[in-house]
Image (cartoon, rainbow, N blue to C red):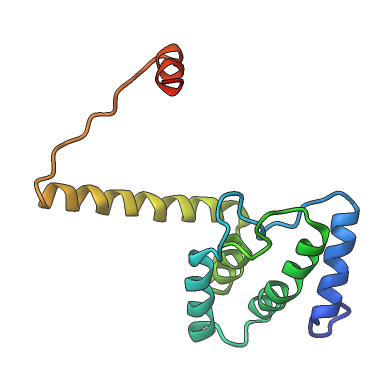
Length: 146
């Protein structure tokens, strides 16, 4: 960017070149969600309150505006909107975690804590303990064809 502030035009052009080179644009196009990723929305709102002025988060904001139309025009993904991965790295970096390889660990731990909270509530509400069944592939195929 030559040291200047990122513009939507510069980001859009970079996105077009990236797609033309056959590369994906990480942080956009959730594989299953066809609506805005709510995790992204929550993290974006948090960043606006607590990280205003951070240049990397400003870039993420410009990307969230400029990249979806490029992806829509290229028809490369069903949902061109940004995902939580489009902003989480910038938030983590803003708060001092500069080792990119740890970002998936942070997200996995938060997901695990959510599962644990669910288990605690299940115990508190005296819900029955669920035991997952183990089935062979043949059994599952038979069940699926019914």
